[in-house]
Length: 302
Image (cartoon, rainbow, N blue to C red; front, top):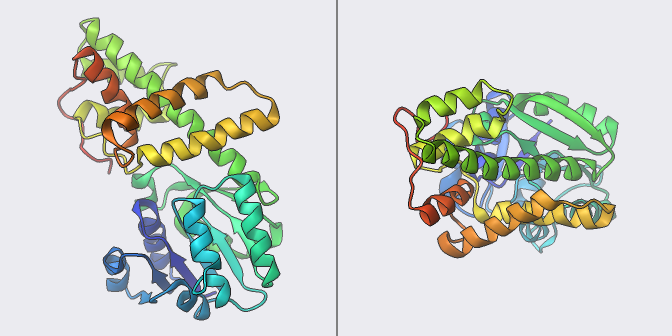
């Protein structure tokens, strides 16, 4: 199976590298060729446009930041559909709304191309280790075909059901992460204002019933002051928008998600859309003129 990979951002670069280390030769493309250098050094082939990628492979994987980017890579004049043969496969590993992935799959089907969605969760550090969770949606036979490639990129692989189902669960997991992040900031601030040693407070929470994956990971970056998780305010607001849309569609009140979304709106206004998403906690720090810092915590997760 020959794979192409388009979208070499924080997550995509690591997923592609894991795929390559797993023995899958790659043809790669990104808006910035410099992003592909580590992969080219490992033996990947560079393509000048998405169409050129598609012409050289059986399956194109994309990991793109927005529906607009997916539309462009998929369907523009030099997009992948212009270079894919009938029966080829397209796998989108970015986070899209359910309606978007279904619409894009219809465009692909018109060219005889089959679609699978496989968004990932776990963060950049787990992507680098090949330890992310992959949430797949699509036909089971297509999922089975690509199991070896998925296992090269992630350690926990779930087939969630038909196309669109992975979009729903990915948005749910991200919504929970953002809510947890807001809660972590408030909890650490209570500890700080209560006179506790923040390092001890961090470890006590991690060993308690109130622990979360977000506390264990992003909590460290808050205490370091880097906030550098490799995920922006804009991306968080995109995913929260998807979640709130599902809430309206399914008739589920999402009070915590709504409050968290408003916090992100406020933080974006102060720090900008490219700022790291954990900086919603800095918004609280700045408002109370109280920094949440403790020695011994890393600037980036390894």
